[in-house]
Image (cartoon, rainbow, N blue to C red):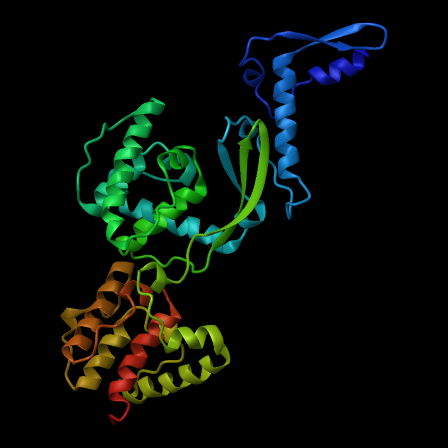
Length: 372
């Protein structure tokens, strides 16, 4: 019996002792064999609640068991926590999305000497989000610079998120984050917020498309923990996220006829080389060789029969901004030539987005295909 009690009193390595001491211990009797043993009720309640959490997560209805930290099982009535399935966390597209967003934030805030390493740990208190929004929107929020208390942090978050909502209001999209979810380090909510900001401010980044995660939602009702699995869609297509919902032939081509893609690429390569060969230039890879904008600018000069002054663009661009400048300049030349504004963004072309590059080149092909 002594060994049995010793096992009951053992504290799991991953559980802080402070958790066991949250409530004043009251004693209850547990009948033993021939004598009575005593255990603190607070410990039994915590153990039972922890076991409930494990059972809810590991129930047969779940497609895969997900480990929940003991702290996550200490929920108030009707409170819920979300846990990203480990398989989703290991997905390369999810990792890429997180990395792209972290790099973007660090680029925007480079002058502030702020370095973000982990989204949920660095953004939950509102400090970085405040600086990010002020930089992107070129505004100044009326909030305290440093807040240590939870109340102060939530007040700052409330101000920041209200400003975000005001910016995004014209899109009439339901918000997928709250003050509590951001402050509670809910990574899914934080990613939804950052993707919305990146799209609204036309960030010069390329977000991976069709990124979804499996999320386990643990909710406490009537003293019991209940779990459910939901799929959270973090990104769709660039066009959808940018608010351009009209589909075109290239959407259909990529979605339903990928086998015909090589035929389209071959036709466009033949078209561009017919003109670029005049400058002893040749294209073999559409998405990579047009990404710096140089060939686009030179091609427009050939198609419209004029010389483009070299000081108007970077002949050997060595930075992302210089490449975006070149592609943007080529777009201006297209508008001057009577073409419609390209559907693609310059940043998408620079980021090697094949669909965007094909759209731009097909726009040229449509007008100049009979030009010798």
